[in-house]
Image (cartoon, rainbow, N blue to C red; front, side, top):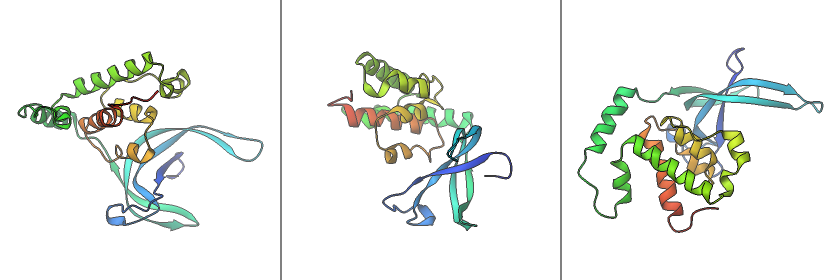
Length: 197
């Protein structure tokens, strides 16, 4: 916890000890989420039920232990300012047309709004097919897909039936286009031939 403000960082377990930048092969992935406790309840068996909300992403710069607890020096990751995002998008969408059949090139040249619309279209098609991963209980937990390009990729990755290691790739991104494009890569490359139920 950071002081007395009910915030704590959470990292994903690195089961394959993949190298994590300057940290090398450590037991955790070096991008994480800072969480704020919204509600906690102490249960009769001594365990606690905690409801928390992610407030920002971070990268671990150094780590160690203190009194038996894992501690670290972290760097906050913020998205690039909107003006910079718009400049990057203008550059990418004015590239020469992609070669025929170059799906990655096509995605890299699409404006953010078009990428989000494509993602929404895919969700509607999967809901029409009664996809198991979009059942009402999932939507009750995660809510409806947001229209905001900054939130949509993280919402989609939360419900998408892909490995946590694939979802983790979103953590280090700082532009809207990169995570939205990631979501579309997952759709195109994983499900072109056989969409999930």
